[in-house]
Length: 493
Image (tube, rainbow, N blue to C red; front, side, top):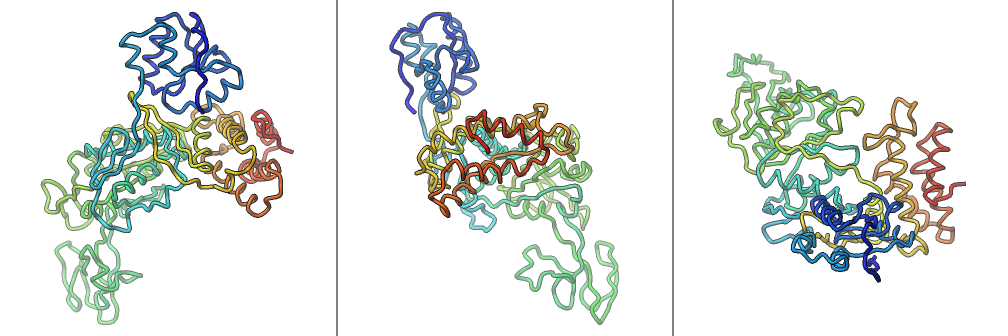
């Protein structure tokens, strides 16, 4: 939406709301405004005028125009208030594409990574990311991933549920063609799953005793019986193999995902890292050291790393995602373990403007602009995920209201660290995320395809009932959620 321009000179002392700037540019703009006698506010309700940069400010512009508040681009505002200093010009933003893909490289914002030549089924497929909105939250996560890869540093992303932590890692891997394995950690995860363990091996059949490797072509790591078939005695690992001419299995060490990834050059994602027991995670300390190393003390003492016998593939990289420690069931990580994750990125929880941008992305294919360090980055165009909704009369007015309702519900349930007002007596809090919002649209689109003659309001209420209200059991909580629906302009009957 193009901002209206000023038709009068700004008045000293006016209250100004800034939108569409990154943090650094906004700080500079505030200094200049205060210097020239203006007040800077944080809400449309308090503002006399809205001043926008080159970033995404569409929701604020729409709200300002409805409130009949003047809207002006930053450069025009500066010229009309009479500030033509070089300091003012530094706040002006340049434009550029957010993502560039070359033959051998990929650029994500200001980070450039080489593309991999590997062909592997472990490279994430494009279809996984058809719903991705390249808003500020997502691009900051992706940049942290790219920064870690560029400098060879392990990366941990901490944040609320559905803050696009794991998705950002997989997306970057997809862009550069990098194989990646995702390990979902939990309270029963042990070091055997990560590093390796001994498993039964049928020496005569050449396969593991239970559903194992049938032939050498399925055995890429050279696992073999610890004693030849028909022999008896101690092997070099100290395991005694007894001859059994019927079907007695020997035992073989099966490497876990970490040593496999070190050999093959995979990325490893430790998903929900702080759900695992701390003593299990501490086994990975040498792996996330700089430089990485590993001793297979569980087996024959094979060494990985600079001083070892097995070189670590250059593409190997460690990532972790986790929720804050105040989430139920999360372990408190030791300072020594946390310190080894040299890039620890705090993933921001999306807000109302981010939800609104995502809705425009999946319905109309419109990606938002993102202002970062003096550049307004423009994501590439995308195909809509729910194109059937785009032609519905009034849908553009409905989507911001749905974003407002979803954001209000998230705040009421305590997401983002606030004290919950909704479900405060429950042992488990309600959780509403981007997935919930996408579910609502999915149900709405299916209803439009099957029953196009029904009203949008009726079908939207059904979708909200399925995606949102159906999760709420308590009558008082349900009434509170309905009140939020009405406040957002989405009536529920």
